[in-house]
Length: 121
Image (tube, rainbow, N blue to C red; front, side, top):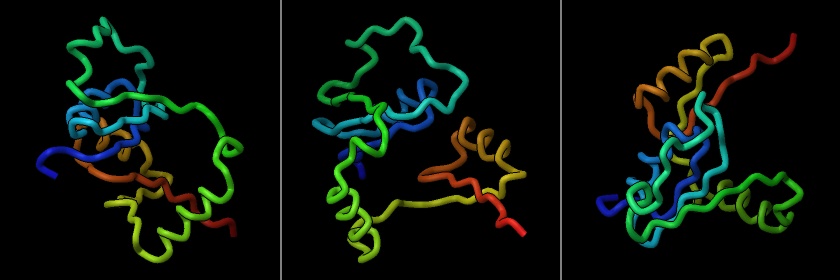
């Protein structure tokens, strides 16, 4: 989208948050919900220069009990019928998960990254 996305879910953390904020349109929302990177604090945080004008930043640190069952079911139904997509997905076998982290940190991927755990034998 040339003007940015309507909403973004930031799962990596403070290292990618500035990119996620810049990729969000005016009046869009970024929800900060993950801390997968090695940095947990935004150094020298100055909101006026850090947050793009008109972009909302919120956070989520709850668990599954915070999501009403009907909302979850509605989302699952939309995924099943194709009216909601998860975007591009790149899968890495568990033994290559370090490569996935490296590719994320180097901005080589877009969309979701999934670690695939082998089935038990």
